[in-house]
Amino acid sequence: MTAWPGSKTSAYKGEGRHDDVNTYIRDALDNLYNAPCCVLSRTSQQSLANGFAINAIAWTTEVEDAYGFHAANATDMIVPAGLDGLYVIFAICEVALSGNGDDLEMDIFLNDPIEAGTPPAYGIAGDTGQYPSAVAVELACSTLWPLAAGDRLTVEIYHNASSAKNLLVTSDYSPRFGLVRVAP
Amino acid sequence: MAKLWTPPPTFVANKRLRVGQVNTYGRDNLSVLRNPAVCLAEFFGAGTADELKVPAAQWFAIPLNQERRDSAALHNNESNVTRITVPPASAGLWFWSGVASLTSDTTATWPDGLSRHLGIRRNGRNGAGEKAHNGGGDLVGIASRFPSSFGFEGMTVSALARMAPNDFMELVVYTDASVDYHVTNFSGFSPELRGVFLTEFREGYTPVWHGLATESSGGVLTAGYCNDQLRDNAGWLRYRPAALMTHTLAQSIPNNAWTSLSLNTTLGQNGTWDGTANTLTVPSGMGGLYLISLSASIDAVTGGDDRRAGVILNNTNRVLVENFSGFSSSQAAFNCGTTRLVRLAGGDTLKAQAFQNSGSAQNTRLDTDAPMVTLGACWMAP
Image (cartoon, rainbow over all chains, first blue to last red; front, top):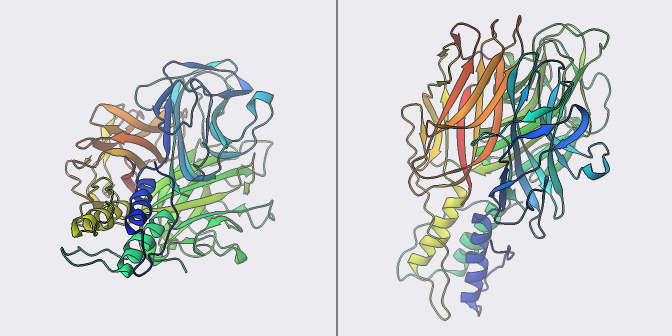
């Protein structure tokens, strides 16, 4: 993707026209057409601790990441320099649950200092489920959010099933985490 | 005032492009494409008890008092208005999402009732506390929480929705418990409604992307260059490949079997999407990364513990699933309103599906308190 060149008013009988056309039409179209995007997944199940543990999903596979939002096996996406903007962001997962407890939550967090084990900083989207029966529960959420370079996004899961449960892996939808820019 | 999109003409060979046309079809139109109509409006602060009180058994429109972003006065924050209104120049396909937390004032016992819903409502009547069918609006997406719970925390609903000029959207909540509920600010989840224009629908128009051309030094802009770059490539970005289909007749869903839903109405499309056989088929040459959405609902019935809705790709891979599981003796209606990004190629097919295990066949829900079943797709990136 080419950087946005800005807009320019072409002057009557102005000089350097072909350069202007290349920059302000060609490069601008390139910038708009090739929207920065990223989609991540996992290849194996992940154990999710019970209670108020921070279960950030570790993403092992970059389904789409031409712009470098994700480092191998990291739990996060970090917005690269120059890619600030308004993004559509989504997450989907499937969790195998049974037995005790009554609460399951998946949230997308912005700039959550999970290494410090402190409470999440800013939730921007989430989904909740409940599971008295032995079922696999799918959670899905999407949102629209302004992101700046360096912003860090994570997907975290909470449950109170009294023992560790598994994040399931499907070839098509669990887990997935992605974003695409829709405006600067 | 922001520049408006000016439909480019078909440029004629051997006719010089005027500077004014370069400015209009290059500078101005590209600026319009880069700056779509967008609004993110929230209720900031604790609010008063009455401001955020949710009456029982009524859809409550959440007041919004602060704009995180507002491109063109789509929301007026001075009077806590609930609406985000679409400007006429930005009618078309929008992506909407809403997030909120809901809690009861009663903590000693679990409140009664079956339903806790968060919805996005288009063109409801002004003011809070009116059910959708009273307000004349329609719910384009709902997310549901397990019945008989206290409420929900940071729940999100999202949908692709077609918006006509001056249509407006609201974030609404519903509970049928007999005790008071309130919208709250939980863990940073301020109640917020977010919307952005994605594409204009132009019936019968087939977007074409020609690739990017470089103008040679000393050359004169040719009609071919102008048509490819200024008309067609910009046209692709203004009228992205996109389609919406809906299901307007109640349909029986057999017990314990994923069932494709009858999508019998096409709301709008760009390109030659094949909307037959309950299927959206991506047109040739229009592959890419798509935002897909599904809104669906199943009747409230007893029995079983699982209600799901999803989207299946090429009849083999279920790429989007949301469920409502774990209940046994009493059920609320199940609602799904969610979106995701998925890579699609020309010829790929999408179908909406539903699943339930109540023990007998049940219907999709199409009453005025349910979202119309809608399957949508919009091209976002190559």
